[in-house]
Length: 151
Image (cartoon, rainbow, N blue to C red):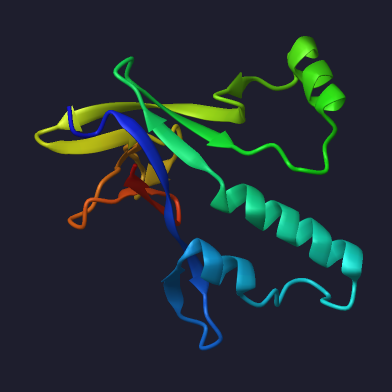
């Protein structure tokens, strides 16, 4: 099946200086301004960059077990011993050497991939569908404001 496999981050939606929603490559995202951070605060900038690096290292793996698994790289400033202890205690789970995030159910509808966001709510008093279309016409896997491309 064409969706099964690993997908790497292609681009992420950001707000540019004109207050427009645009997609940025991982490199552009890492270099983009931080309007919500005091850029004179070195610790805040460092924390933001660590978070951004984690995001650009995110991968999605669509598996034939009916789930999409999202993984994040382990921050370079976390000692291996801490990671091993967190795994041992069950605080985190690793998948292919990365931190396993939430898994989402997926299914095919026709030839399109859909995934269950697990977001519940109502629209005009009726239950909203928690399923979202996961692929677009350009072949990207879309998740929230991120687009992934198959490796």
